[in-house]
Image 1: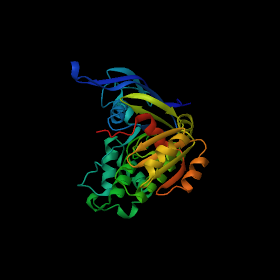
Image 2: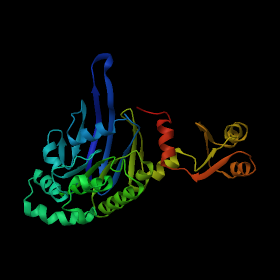
Image 3: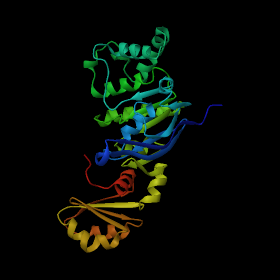
Image 4: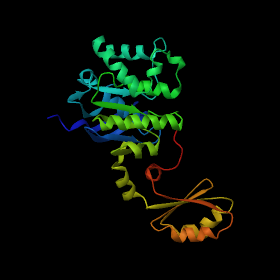
Length: 310
């Protein structure tokens, strides 16, 4: 029986620089991925997400800590481990000199697969990516969404056990994002394992069985999305905006909220009983509002803050 843990990391540390210029990028990070799940890694810019992926792939060597990937010690056996994984990088790195089908064929050869095996897989992968009609097209003829779907299909050419996806839908329009989501759900239903980094909270909430929120290279929360929301955030949120929103918030909203935040010209009222707030807003002049359940974005902003990160 195969090990139910497909990836484990324990006590990872990674720093760059020397002396007073030394920067701790990863600081004691530990986590595990179970076979067949989608595990999300969330964090603001500079939190250490991409460095974590590079450590797991053996592309960066940790200062300390241990990593075990598909039964192999990393980075010592990284080459052997990478035969069993797929990678969807942040940016598309398709070869512009080859057609869609040729990109899949050439990439399959990197794994030492016989051409006959690759050619047998290509039609299924093109169908999966909804690119059958584009099999002979050049990369320059593809839209951004098509390129992302081809990059996803390419990551599956070696029939991997685990797929690393680094912000797979960044820059895509809503239709393309939803198509990628549908394809990822299909992979999960087929028993694949996905390690996902994303800035889209709705993406993480839709896809992830479990997720971790990291900041400054440290784990600050981990668990199932809805369980994390329930543990850290009030059940309901009322967003208030409009010309009189700030004055209403200071005179009424703050006292009625379990937690009260102002971001720009919008007020966020967090509560477990929104009715008093809604009754007040119904007769208030110069305000508009949205009433919704708490979501993963609320959790993320509470744990990592609302300030911009460069």
